[in-house]
Image (cartoon, rainbow, N blue to C red):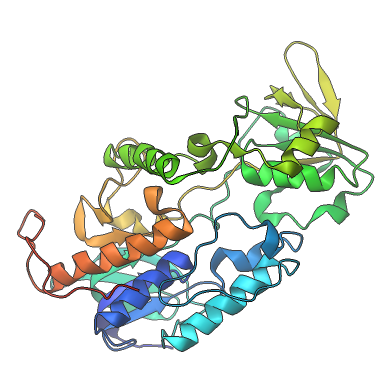
Length: 374
């Protein structure tokens, strides 16, 4: 898809993971026509969102909290198959069923103010002039690497969760896993089965959650993240809100000492990590399971960030620009949250396209059209 000029559409959706496909589904159900009224752009080579890049040992049976996309259930998936394959196939079938026509691979380099009150979306396949934007770029493309003194001198291997290949490549090695989230514990439990030695290091003591994560707990967790977003702060990590689930596998790993945690080290040497109290642990590999940050650099020209480092939202709408909606960001950074946020964003965009927002972006009393309920 190469355009010599600028193509005008009503809505551009950036990203075709759970959040982007949810938004595209509701645009479709609201009567907008793919490629004429809206376009979906995805930088990935194939369907599947971030799931397509997950390590092979993360089987579908190990996935926690995968919620189906609106309008189509995921059924009959074998628990032992890699989640990247299962969810990739599901997303591909979903795109086909609803005729979403995702354009890929397309890199979005910048979104800036355009002509005539439209946003200009600059991409590897030309530019788009759009009346509204659904940004659903997630976090996978922006892994967070902490920096510690001496890190550049380490002679072993350093890698991030984003590059985790599965446990086999760590056989016989001394491995330090850094990070107190779900990925860190999953990596650690796998690697401990084949490594010569493993060490778990986290900035804060991990909090293990007993019992089910029920609806009330979910509401509390979402409320905490929403408050940060309302204040314009960067969203918190999920585990800092929810804690780590204490399941049978985790209990067994704790009993074996695999999940005995050490506080964060102070520096790194050629062959070890070192604490200021004199303790050191030799290592061949440091695996940084330190999470991700929102991939929103392309929105920089719009000046949406607050002093606290985040984009302040009202619902899904950026407070600084009513044309921009973030889905899969902050409180909607879960599969079920992304579904709901996709629908909410399309409802708000419907009001905007119908001219029902005032100059200051006030909410309209009622929508002109509503996306259908799945």
